[in-house]
Length: 168
Image (cartoon, rainbow, N blue to C red; front, top):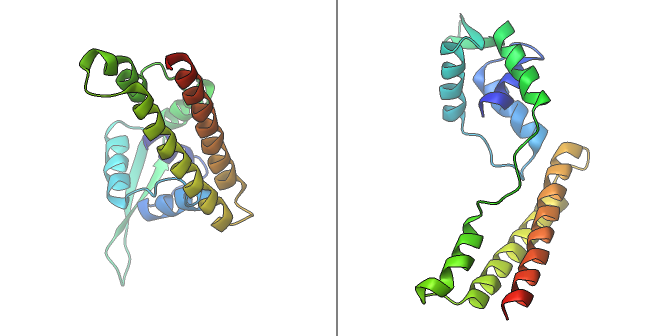
């Protein structure tokens, strides 16, 4: 959460609720909605580390609000984030660990595990398809997020087929 919030602040100062709205508008309904409490806790931590600076703004008819702006150190952190590659291949996969250990425990059947995981992936794909159908057509980022998740699921389904072929 900290790096996306920093990246949003590059375009200008904002308060926590504005940042929450910006994330929701950008990513659409497929992405888990950020908790405003988590956002404010993260903003507090970013401020303590000097990546952002906060300023209280008086409001006559409401409680004061805190506006955050990115610092030079924050900009450098965002630049470094965009320069890094993201993640490594999933070699620490919980399902694969279950599949590998099942024969050693005698408490689970590998093919049953594969079938159960396949059903889970197919249900998730169905849910994502419904989300895509209901998503605002102009929100290309949200559609790309959903499409990426579905492509990953399809690859996982193909891999499950390969596992089943190998283990039967």
